[in-house]
Length: 92
Image (cartoon, rainbow, N blue to C red; front, side, top):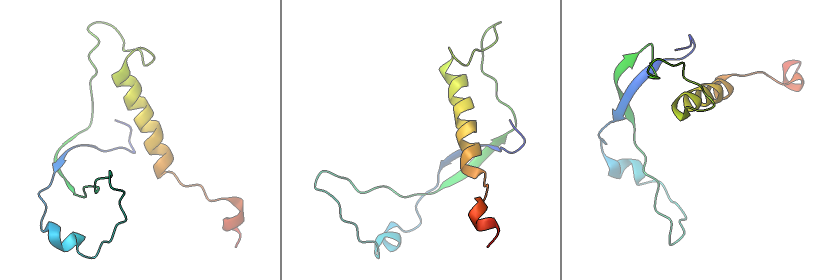
């Protein structure tokens, strides 16, 4: 795993009191639209490395969807969590 990442295994945490969290929320839903479920996750395990089995071959990201998805996820996570202020806001 890259240094800036943390590998965790999560599972859905049980809801504490679903009535109290949704009482004050007013949503305008279409007739065919279902309300979005809101919940939380709890960490059940941590890991610091991952193995994609290739059985005596090096995994190729262009052909292996698992390797490609991990590379794309790491790129997206890096973009989401990086911050570079624009030139306008740095001098104000």
